[in-house]
Image 1 (tube, one colour):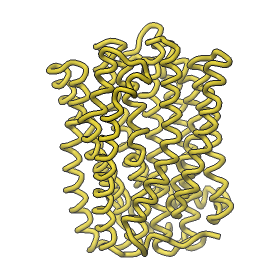
Image 2 (cartoon, one colour):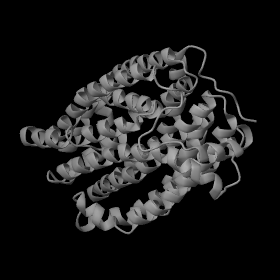
Image 3 (cartoon, rainbow, N blue to C red):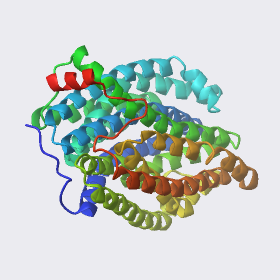
Length: 464
């Protein structure tokens, strides 16, 4: 039996806190396993292994971003249908976003798998490090359809307000990965291959445990049908296409940073890889904001409660600000033990210390961008997310990272990257306020770029 919309009443700051913290626990469980992977790999004492994980991580970030885009589409459409009280439409949208996500995921994974050596080389990997990165990715990339099932399934659960069930799915996957890692990496002496196999099993686990609660508690899915799928292709694409483009900007920007780091040697790449693994563990709550705040904004917008949409946006900015101050203080106090945990010395340690200082505090601006993206995607302006993200990871990354590297070496690359976040975080606030001001005059079902609902499509929805 499908549940009614739950974010139309109650304290919004509390909703944001509960959704963000529960969603982040699940995300952090997965990211924590990647963090532990890096610790295990660092314990092997081979700099080329740590560097290979850095290159592989940039490419996996690229593939994961595709799944996040589809999950954003699912969450926005399902939550909006629930807010409008149309449970049947919510179930249909859940079914069709899941089918489309897996179908496109298979195609995308195949394209990436066929070009792994080229992509890793493009990032700066070479010789043994290139071979190690490609070998790792050849195992993990084919599991992308399972990752899509898990991400879209989790988004559907959060759209229903079931943040705890979405969290538990990722926790189960994280536990499976954490158990298998030491067994495969050390027990069977498989090193990177063992880490890759553990990640595949974890993805399958998350997919299964995300879909089962939807079937049992939230109305399940409709029978797959091409006739039912086609009318939803345009509304799904209207959000998914710009959302995917939005998410793709991040790994492309990170890829540029990885290549910029490569010129400073494997110590610099290893340091950047450690920072990349630490960031989502430390700021999992911030990474979860877009998916957590999206359903709250979507349900209230679908119900025409525009004042609550504005309050939700404001409270989300306050929440992320408080969290970043606390986390930056904690990281600064623990910077020496963290560096020692990875055996980081020299340039690698310098980069870890830099992240645990001012760069952690500056992460608030990234959180602002995540909240802004949630507002854009759920208020019918998803291309604003695309513009902000691409601007942040091109104009806000490339020239500033180059300038920072020229001025300060490897640390300057990270400083320049953070500077772009400040500029585009402020831009996201300004744009989001404009969108919310205009939403008062728009109908509850927002207009999408390149989408016009025809009478035939409306009739097909009614017949379902």
